[in-house]
Image (cartoon, rainbow, N blue to C red):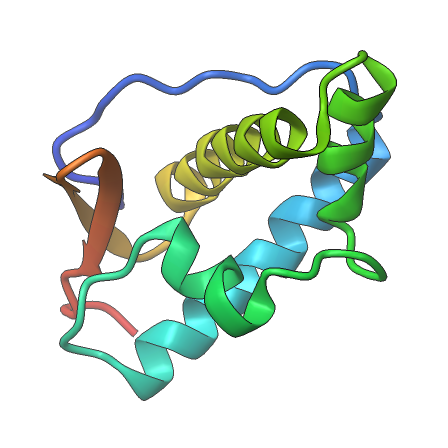
Amino acid sequence: MALNPLSELRDVYGISDTDKALIKAFMQGAVYCWVKNRKDEPFAVRDLMGGENFEWEGTPLHVLYEKHISGGKDNASAIEAAAKDLGWLVKSVLADDKRTFIPSKAGLVNSYHWVGSEP
């Protein structure tokens, strides 16, 4: 299953493998929640972890922000870079998932739609 069609995947560096695994598990839960509750709607990472869910402190995602702050970026730049890292991690979660997701581009963001033919 996975992404259909296949597309470029990138790894995220500067965080531990454990942190990466925690982020992926956390985001897979968010994706499954979206699919369960909004089955016919595409989603972007900002739908899952933006808006009311923008505050990442206390979640596995916060290490992405801290990585960029530690690297000398200002707050706004660190937020933007952490969001891009999260986008790549979510894309890899979807690529490895048992379900099939169709990627699309809506403006500057990638969005995904679950095909819905598998359990």
